Length: 330
Image (cartoon, rainbow, N blue to C red; front, side, top):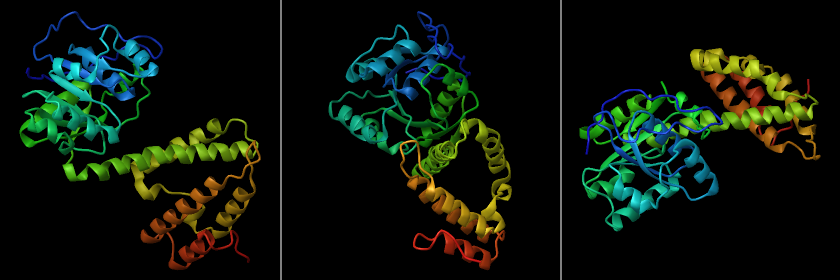
């Protein structure tokens, strides 16, 4: 097994083009033979990034037509192989599979005796640390958990976005520098995360990013139902400013009717949302429900930080409670 020396990756090809082919043979010391399982959005992009710094991708696993096309685009010339053959060939095996598939895959390969002593085994799951790789470790492999805190489109433009991206690393102390070096090679900024903190960390990212998308698309649907043709363009400047304030000012950057204790406006919002219909005539019940829940959470935080008095918070909760009317009189 070779050592790893840390340098940043190139940026790969354009969004619609192929990534450049890797050199025929590694020309720098410390290069590894890398196997990618599998060619989803994350695996193919990370394979492309490692190839750009002259690691040799020796094989990629791709089952669906979409993943095969992605492998051809981002990893041209790399053979598409079965999982066992990739593990047999690779010095570094990169497991970029769904969370629920990771444990059974690692255990299954261990049961078959495929893991090799000294082999690097890295996974990209945010949920898990290194413990999920214990079956491979018992076979002598070196377990590494590396999670880039970003979303992936599955195109070569993602490689450039890796530069400066925070990446959580979890590994046994003796091999932690290897995980950190791999992150640096990908262009990222490593930070160490304890095994026990991985589920909490992943929940925070999912809540902040995935649920943000849900809220934004709900707002676009509401604007469409209200007759606004380009809801995304209308929301863009407001959401950009709100996100910037949230990241830099925290809760002090909050504005809007809940933060002011404007219960009448909140009641009017709920009443208006309950009457809206989409283009198929369906009510926007999911929007009403999430508005209630998020406004209630905002009320709690505003009261806790002193933005709202107890009386203001109580009046808002009377409106927002699921068994209460959407509108207060007076």
